[in-house]
Image (cartoon, rainbow, N blue to C red; front, side):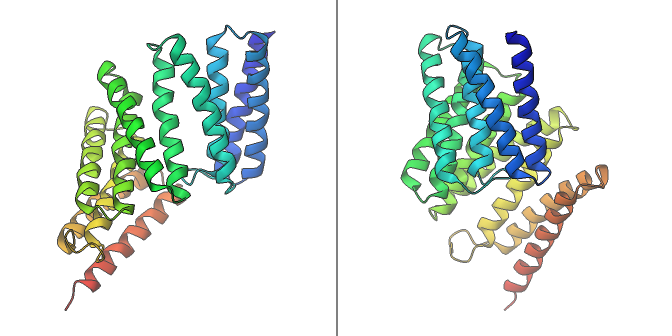
Length: 274
């Protein structure tokens, strides 16, 4: 019963997410491997079922995230994470060759290029990361343009700018970093305006304010140093974080974020004194 096995794979996938975010990363990885194995069996049983094949690609991304992506709870296995992302990319390229208009395939192509760029950045391959993030932005910009009311597509588009901003900052390109962070912030600000209850958009916008503040506070980047501007960005982030913390009082990670940004503000204030 393919439908029953697909449901079982989804359950294992969701278990993996919950286990990893709850702190039991090895169990999360094992559940995700089980999910991938079931999805792979379903795809092998019917190679013409594009949905089943795409599920394998998505499952490889999920596994890669938990193995070594620094944006997720992970095992620190960046090489194995890359193997899974590259496996996903190969499958998605194959599906795109069969039907380049398929929305899910287009979205996940943009996502997997971002994931590959993240690992390349982590491994110090800045040239490769820059190219992967460029491809991600290209895919996501086109998909967002074709789907202007799709919240996920718009969110992905904003993330693409954020990732390129990270790349610019790592390469000491402060002007380009600020430009791309601001483009990302504009996307998430609009998402939050459209839906004031979109917590994901709000926290991402707060994080981007922090990144802009970090660039302005970084004294190794003399052209962009702006203590007053950095304080302003940190205050914007704090305002958002405190509102979210008031809604979800049990969110320990949010409280940690508030403490971290408060410390950044203090450090900038002290460093700006003669």
